[in-house]
Length: 383
Image 1 (cartoon, rainbow, N blue to C red):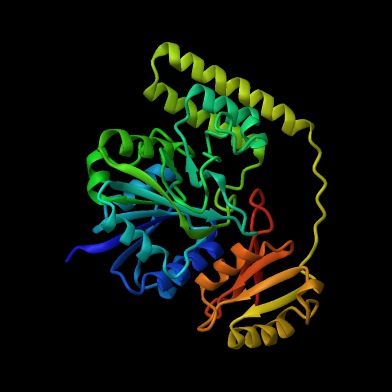
Image 2 (image 1 turned 120 degrees about the vertical axis):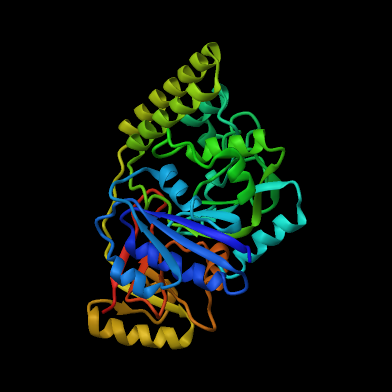
């Protein structure tokens, strides 16, 4: 029997977030047949005996060295048995209906070869890289110079992230994000998976480009299906370093797809844009106050909420459990039978809290959250 879906997760030093990702996937996969493959790129923080015991349905592959994102995904592709393949980042939460709804879209749209979804960060903000355009010289310059960020909905300057397209609707788009990219397995076999010349960044652009241009199928962005992506947790790069690595990845892309004259224009556009943006970043002073998790407001499933309150009283006695949401620095969403991952993401999308938002699953021994899409995540143990 052919499985509905193979899910490939490449992990690197995000054990706590990986656990929550797998918990959400387990819940979202109840009504479909799935194969889950975790490929670890020589992480230093993972206890695989513990993970294998925790998730016996998952196939864990341990690389002896960090092969890069694309190469590690190709290891997973070689084992994939599903009709469709989902590339999923380990620092994501997948709501209850997302996988089933994505598969339904494929079945109802014969021209769809790959799809991505509406990704939100830990504060419920839309991540613009959920949908992107081809990185032409002009598009790349607008992106790297910061013009796109300043005029995100402009049809001229906002082309990279297609900011003029409604983020809550479905659209055919050129480029999808590797954090959540679902593809027909037959097309992956046809185009050959990820190009391993890309170590980190750019490989999803390259794969999207080949899928759309070499197969006769379209890439779709599904704006009504939302997932959570704690962006930055699995890469942990500062802005200037990110620009450098992304610049190098785009250099690989340029060399692969552009002739000498266009390649020169592309490199010039990226170089000029990066120089402008790095100067702006270097002259911008950020003052951040480290605010501890001093007070929490718990909401969600009452059974989970009650158990967590008792745990925190024993293990984190300095934390105040607030009786009103407005008095808390941290909002904790308690997952359970009456409050699912789907409910938590729906609430996050509608509320847009100013406080730190964290998640607690009663089958876990810690809470996770992220205060900013450009910062690393936060973990609080409860045992």
